[in-house]
Image (cartoon, rainbow, N blue to C red; front, side, top):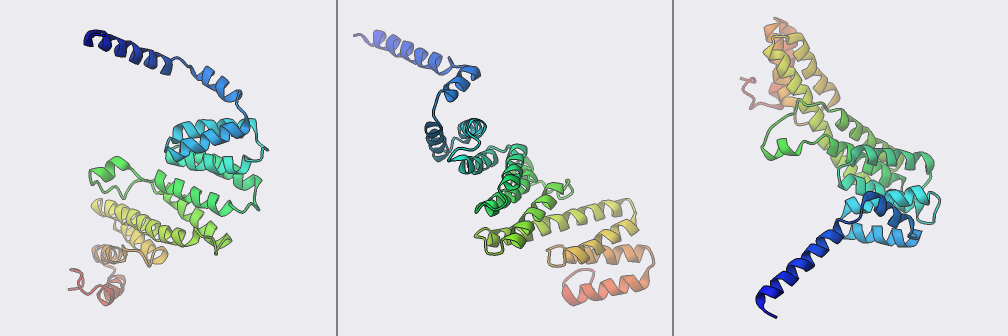
Length: 255
């Protein structure tokens, strides 16, 4: 066989493979899934997860969850579905599956895992990958998902203090506290630029009251000192300045 003939044979073979790969429609895929047993589908889902193909895994697990809601693998299917949704960034689907699992299985041994995944899902939903890649600080973006994540981790720790996920949850709560404190500082600075000094000072005081162990305490005190100075509130300014000098003597405001 000449090289030219070999080339055409290979090209035809590749075309056939491409056509075969594109030949099945979503309806045909659903039909293929419907004709497989629960065990076969579950094994296929496990293989897809092991290969990192969480899109395929979530489709199979979703089919399993719908067709066999009370099967022998039902609980693990739901837990794997939660993880698959999380991995492909389908936060709303993950949260809905988590809430359903916790509601229907309040005494299951993996409820702590479900709550942990709820915290992770909400925490990741607060991130903006593009902004992180270009180094943009958008501390002023809506922190509602971070607040939800904080509540999720706190619920896990309160309900399951000995859970293997408790230690990591505590670390994440510290991170979230700093995130929420940075948000308050960003809003305070926004108010200061508009000379709304009362509102700005209140944001600083809020950080002191609710996030006293965060990384933003120095900035909060500095904002309070500056705002009280602008408002001619001498006693409040001196109190804030005294606390600032005591805890952060290197601050430019301390001098």
